Image 1: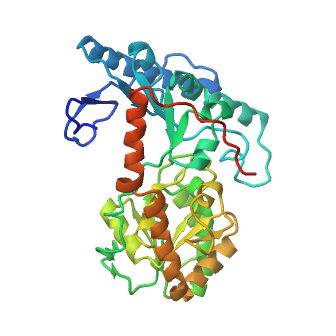
Image 2 (image 1 turned 60 degrees about the vertical axis):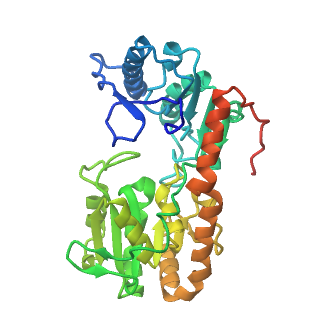
Image 3 (image 1 turned 120 degrees about the vertical axis):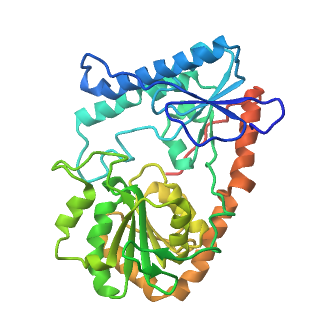
Length: 399
């Protein structure tokens, strides 16, 4: 968009990002915390309102300099778009609808299974959507990256939300290229090694880290030459930290003490994107686990690199993976079955060849940045800016 003649693009945010040619960056100062203690349900909401106020003040500076946007794109999650409609009433607004919280059918109440969601948790979840609901009312249009994430939003809102993924650059995420990775101990892994990868931004329950760790003892017994590479940090992106303190990695290492051979399990922290793709190219199997929640880009990156995928049979994964066609599926909570399926895939690499090829073809057909997603995104932006987008009829979801 910024490369178009006569188009000005301004990025408003709290943090500076690497300079993108043609885009002007404007930062707003992080808001100060409130001096009073709100109701526990409203702690996050108050913070989001303060972010919205700070973003609006920065937007006022733009307006005072004569800037009048035709189109505003915002993420609703932190409240930055709350008051932009009031600053620029004539602009069209598109929001990125990533996830609408509900107490049934999603992440809330999923783990542990069979435990009812308390009234307190259900009420807290309902209030958690307050900021999104305000911005839903202000939005002209919206976009969700997957059909399942779109389906989490209220039925009355879905007709003004397009389903378009951010896109995977399949010219970079490709089976060709570097397929080696040097471990912290100096050992070089290649395609000749038997490797399983597990990747998450942070090692935590939302991405199945405990289940993965519990599968390792049986997996190591079944595959004595196996090397496991674990990518991810010790923080928490979603959910809560361990009640006893520390990180989920520390908690699971204590639980698994004496049960796994740590000389064959390599925790490498976060790695640069190029190194991550190298791991996806050399891995024999990539394990991807998630709650019913936001789908990770990493699974699609791995598929684009031609990795064999074993994914959890949860809704975000089921939208992408067809068992035995472009990947394999396993019950999220069944770590014994997880170990058996991983071992079976490792024992028969020839059977994975057509599945791996189908995985990349699926990404090319549905998630390719240059040929699929970016053209759809540009077309949507142009249509909304011109006022051409019309709400679509309600779509019945499969049972």
